[in-house]
Amino acid sequence: MSTGNLIVDLDAVVANWRALDGMTGGAETAAVVKADAYGLGAGRVARALARAGCKRFFVAMAEEGAVLRQALGPDVEICIFSGHMRGDTDMIGDLSLTPMLNSLDQLTRQFEALPGAPFGIQLDTGMNRLGMEWNEWAAVAQVALEQGPSLVMSHLACADEPDHPMNAYQLDVFHQMTDGINVPRSLSATGGILLGSKYHFDITRPGIGLYGGLPFEGAHLVASLDLPVVQMRELDAGEVVGYGNSWQAERPTRLATVAAGYADGLLRSLSGKATLWHGDQPVPLVGRVSMDLLTIDVTDLREVPESLQILGPHQTVDQLADIAGTIGYEILTSLGARYQRRYITR
Ligand SMILES: *Cc1c(COP(=O)(O)O)cnc(C)c1O
Image (cartoon, rainbow, N blue to C red):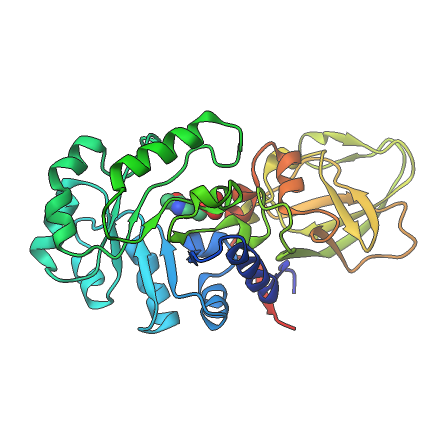
């Protein structure tokens, strides 16, 4: 078998959820499982969290919500960030999804097509991405509140920078837009939880922190990725490796070719820069990342490896992201469909 092994520690996901939950006193901690739980498998991740007591899940699109409903059954709330889009009415109604309505158009669509069905409200407090702005909200708030939304939410643009003045600004705007209404409020994702109790309100919505990523520094490791060695070869000094001949051996070199490439989310910008691991020993990626293969200099290993690790205790998603010039979120959500995902619990 030449597919990589992506090992997802479900106990670590649950431990991260509990740790974030423990930071917020009385607030409810939901879970964001959009984009297939950041690439790790929404069904398995969400079932583990539901067993641990999570009652509310967020996804980006109604289609994701439909898949999640099949996995979780009827007893949890599944909220849709993109709200109620044209064409989604049957899915939202039949599967009792909760759209986060983000415009007057969506509000009208919801109340006409699915009167009495659950919904939430999304407000824009300055990020200018999703949600109703002040004027729009002022015009419809009374009508919307009469229909009994299950929550009112907004999203912070700079929560991963605790000192950024945008945080306090958005907090203030959120208060002004929602103080005095009798509906549960939600402002914070992982970063907002770490900003402290003023940001917690009634419901928090962590995503990346559940999966072991920054800004949650204390997170448990969730994802490990082992790549099988397909072939070994011996190079003489002076021989070259890979597309563009971008690496040349300076010494007699033992090279391992492993099965994963940029089609599996190991970004081409890792070429010539990344490190893989054999147990505790680092081994450098040499030459370019190809679509399905990486070439690794294993000259300094004592034995011939069967596989090498690219994510694990020695290299987190954020460390790999740094090397690639991106963020942990992008590394996780790029992890491809070809890996064998194995779920472990202890
Ligand atoms: C993705 C997302 C989240 C989760 O954010 P993390 O930074 O991964 O915790 C929460 N709320 C909204 C609106 C989102 O789009």
